[in-house]
Structures are given as structure tokens and as C-alpha cells.
Image (cartoon, rainbow, N blue to C red; front, top):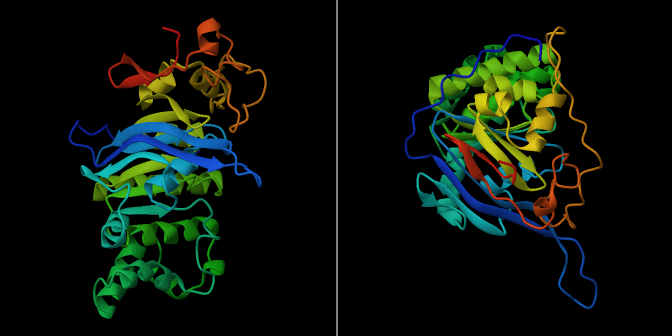
Length: 334
């Protein structure tokens, strides 16, 4: 990304996490037939664990199909996990139902990838933003109008925009409406699934700056899902790299970008474009394709493409182990 973006602030001090995810998994059946034999399972997410502090941005990165968007949907409880636990402020919400689930969803909101498809084309912008407040019975009608006006100003939209329909806005403006809607219930955590990937580069920078400003002003936490390492480098405090449903490396942004320890992370970083044409990175060419998720290879899932694979990699699945303070990688290489 060539446009200027405000840098992420210093990572918050270690305190009790806002969000804890432990052993999260989602398996999808891929067949079965009339005989009802044991069905093969696609392990879209396979034992993902991490925590997230207030005011922190954790970025999930990886190739398409690695499971990062599924993690976001699981945390939002848009789909039900097959295993694992989701805790917010120490309270397990994995099986929450009724009022407990409703209260949880008030605290966790989402910004969608497509800033047009995620907005109801029949509703005016003000109605779209006020809808969460109406659904939760928060504030009077007049107070809701004032809240919506404040949200519009906070995300950089003019007051007259409230009376327009989604088709009357640019892509960046529509995404600002989506951000305002996500803020309406004053959440603690926002799951942002590729929120700038559909926007022009210059508009991406503006929206990223807005997200950083909102995080610092409101103490928000972001689970930011992206494949664009340029975007991730600007907004992240920590980065988790996913491959075939698992986190293969997680750590502070500087560690991941400057000293990646997993061969897959190294390949991702080497392939990322560099804005300065005088700087060159040594390319790491990965052989082969991503393995089939319903039929992953034994041992390390990355070993068929890894230039450093040895016998142990083919039979034993590596686990995340510390490489430095707060930096873990799932690799048999030391």
C-alpha cells in the first residue's frame, strides 16, 4: 500500500484478555451417502487458540481457504463450533443461547467485506445505522436520531448523508456507514473481515486511518482478517498466520514481519510487494498447490510445499512452541 496510513499504537500492557479462544474447531461434512457411513470431514478450522486484549488489533492472515473468515464467523456465533471454547471477559459463550447470546452479540459486532451487499438497498443510511439500536430497544426515537448523527460525524459522513440510499454513496462512504452501524451498540470487539479489500488504495488508507482513530478513541479491540500484508503491517499489534485451518505462527507485528520463523510465513513475507523499488526481497518459491482440506497430508500440513521438510515433518504434526517472548511457531525446525 503506497498511501500514508497512521501507524498502529504501542501494544497494550498485558492484562486479563477481553477475548479468549481455545481449541476452536469447525468441521463440515463432505458426503456420506445412503448407507450413512462415517462421513469425511473438512476441517475448516482445526484447534485454533489465541487471546485478544482491549484496544488491541490481532490480524489473521493466510491464503484464501485457510479458515480465517470461518474463525471470525465462529467467534460471532454466526456458525456453531464443532469443538473448543470462546470466552469474553472470562465468561464462556460457546453454548450461550437466548438472552445470554443476545447480550454477547451486543458486545461483538462485524464490519463486512462488501460495503454494498452488506447494506439493505431499500433503507436510508440513517435507518441502517439506527437499526441495531431499535433491535435492542436502546434510547428513545429522538435519542436514536442524535446518536446516529454523532456516529455519522465520527466516521466522517456529512449530516445530509443520513437521508440517502446506499446506491448514492461511493464504496468508501458505504464502508463508513457499515462502520457506523458496527459502532451503534458501543461494542468492545469488532470482527473486520477484509474491510478494505474492495476499496481503491487511497480510500483504503482513509478507512484504515479511521479504524485506528476509533480504536484509540473508544478502546476497541479488532480481530482484523486480511490477506493484504501491507494493510496488516499498518494496523496490527499482533499477527496470526493460518494455514489449512491452523495457526502456524503468532506474535507481535515486528517479530512476524522482521523475523518470521515458520517457512510458510517466510514465503508470505517474501512475496509481499515492496513500495520502495530500490528494496528487493529474496523470493521463496513454493512448489505445488495447497493440499485438499478434506484430505490433508499427515504430519505437518505444509510439508509437501516446504523447502526445508524432513522425515519428522511427514509423520508428526508440530505444535505452537515459543521462539521468543510472545512469539510462537508450529515448526519442527529450531
